[in-house]
Amino acid sequence: MRGNVLNKSRCGRPHKLSDRDARAILRKVKKNLKISAPKLADQIATASGKKVHPETVRRILRSGGYNGRVSSKKQFISSVNQQKRLDFASSHVDKDFDFWKTVVFTDKSNFNVFRSDGRGKHTAKIVKEWLLYCPLKQLHSPPQSPDLNPIEHLWEEVDRRVRQQAISSKETLRKAIEYSRA
Image (cartoon, rainbow, N blue to C red; front, side):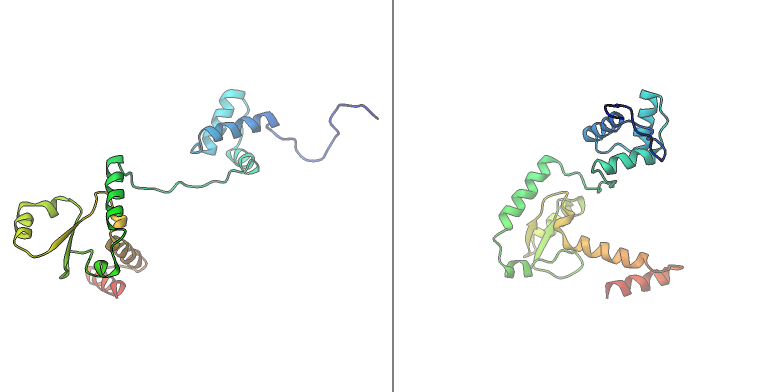
């Protein structure tokens, strides 16, 4: 039969959503990448009256090239502090290896350069007085910059190792911390 515009019969269940509905879903996701499949399914049910399972929405999104991802949690850094971080990095980019060997990013050791991030414990009156009479040079780092402090990464690793062990008492916690630091 030539010239017939009717759909041919086919096996399988027909799609619940039309191609037009699928394009509408993809447009909504393009406008808001953080919208979830259940919310989209609710919006479709409200707008068109078609009750759609979130997995159907996910299938359409995958066919449109979208994959489910959880956005990484990043620390908010204000524009003022972003500029301070950039200035800090620019002023220290040309420092040689010998300079960085004298910097110790902790307050538990003897060191030649005192690192301060402007927090209260570093700017207290007693600390300022001590620094006046102490022969230490200070390396002032910008606020909101834990990533510039390698010790933060070390403590993160210690924390990860400790959490892998079964802790039942203070003594086992102490041993786990000592073991993870070794």
